Length: 463
Image 1 (cartoon, rainbow, N blue to C red):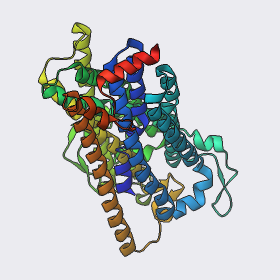
Image 2 (image 1 turned 45 degrees about the vertical axis):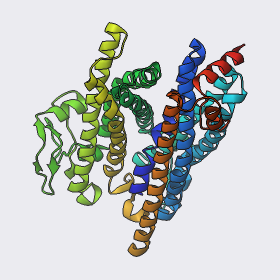
Image 3 (image 1 turned 180 degrees about the horizontal axis):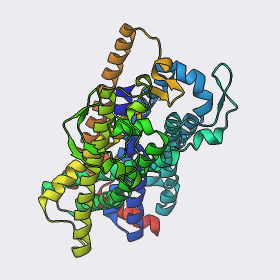
Image 4 (image 1 turned 30 degrees about the vertical axis):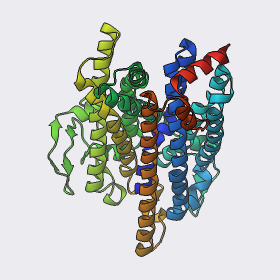
């Protein structure tokens, strides 16, 4: 489950956010009559479609794993929190239909009609995120039910089960996080091109639009991250203690950047900042922070699990802080000169920002899931009660098959993207000219028309 989730979540930012970024570029192209922007939107829509197809495979495997690996949880709690998965399934089907319409419309619909038919795409993506985050938020702060004498949930209140105390902080933190991640990843591709000397308008525009979106959202995400950490402090104090490796309940608690928690409560390594943890939690050094020892050892993460959650959280915070500096660098240059920074170091940093964001997405889920241990449904069901009884030999065989399939699928995804990129680059350089270019670009749903043809067709559509 950890492997498939970690693999699938790398695709999630593009599934949720790339439609919105593509439509933003599409709007710019129509509004300004910009053929380069339309060409970029056309190509990004092709990537969006390929990513969606790959996401079908990885997402389907996850849906099967919920039933195969977690029968105890799904059997008892499925009626309570299963609505989130139902919403996600409906969003998935709607998104598939809308992507097909959007791709089809590039050659066959009037420009503005085509654009407005694409507008629901990011909304369906957000609806899918709504369903999944609602289910996860319920696992962190379960609500909307009562337990009968045998411990089974009854009197289910769907509204309370969906809109749990952690839903709002989790949802907005997740949405903003995946949008800025997609923005940095897309901009990073063009940053590499700019570093290689491709200073044409195509690369400048391909970098500027997604990077601007990501830069604007970066400080917003930092504030949302602080908000969700404070929500965890109030709603899941033991998880907060794990992520901050707080052993004993106390005031004036220091903050440790990294460091390792040992089973006896001692901490080795890291950077100790006196009183900062209490200040961050309650804006005062007198704030009392609940420690791991406030509950029995069987009801809290182990020292190793707490260290894993702590490192994941600190990596997330560190990368977020560095991205704020990068966004400020970009904003300062833009406000002063209305131009991109001139330093090659800026573009080197921008090129790796996308990969760093993908790492923070992974770290966010690690913090959420590992910090909640040993509970799969917080304070209601342990992981040991929910997991399948499959024998170890069978489990390792299944795991091996899944790893092979995922390596092939993700490898194919990267190979397709590289092939598309090479073909587009050759077309831009004039290698695929005349009839040959028309034949290769053709009427397929994944290749853009040459720039001159695109511009002419769009002008004709407007007229």
